[in-house]
Length: 229
Length: 117
Image 1 (cartoon, chains in turn blue, brown):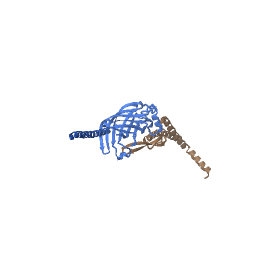
Image 2 (cartoon, helix red, strand yellow):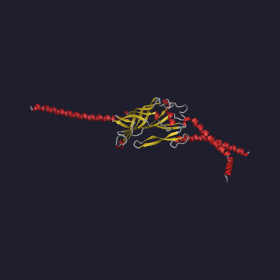
Image 3 (cartoon, helix red, strand yellow):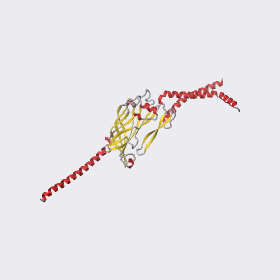
């Protein structure tokens, strides 16, 4: 009788052990999966209070040089520290918000002779991938990557493929960063130039090449903070 | 010296320097005409500045951003915060000074000829 009663006891003991092991395995694998997922899906928003993103532009021409900035920047970037090359994202800036410090010139710039803000209100850059990724610097509070960004640039309703050298600085959350905003930060810096003719911007006759440069230099600094992990 | 005498002296001085004053006003008028012509030819491309860029440095990220400070600066005048604009203005003024200088030299030469007669 005692044997008969001990069989279910042993069986229930084994079941308990089995369930416990299963739970531990599930918990461990679950946390591993979660950890893997968190490193794989860091999404950074460029519309953040962490810092001010700026796109500076410069036109150099024999008769006039123009410098300005675009500050109304929105967008995001999906960044994977374990696979930086797979990063992707999108950045937009409103044409009507671009400034050169001279309101009359700003009106000319966004008029239909030039950027035509009414028909094409946004300038958009879409990051598709990174290649030639290398870690340039790594210390306690940040990791700096150098790479070449491959994406598409849309201006004046025309989209062109664009490759440009880019520097990514990933700053994990710390007491210092929490003073600005919660979560990790990312800084994206790149510089490139675009030819106005490539985007069907001809301007007022005779101006391009004399008072407005045939190509415009862009200097981009984007600051993003992690929105989810 | 009474006021009549003073007035007479000033009038005499004016008459004496009439030619010089005429030259001065002619030169200023020519300068104004040249600047107006350049302004008009350039159309909206010589602008009156309405804001000045101030560079803000972010120590955490090591980046620089631009803050625009509203600041009215009349077109054609040099704007300290915009060295390129100052260069343009200097070029325009330099261009304007050439015919002005020529006018002054021509006038001076003309007076010289008159005096030798």
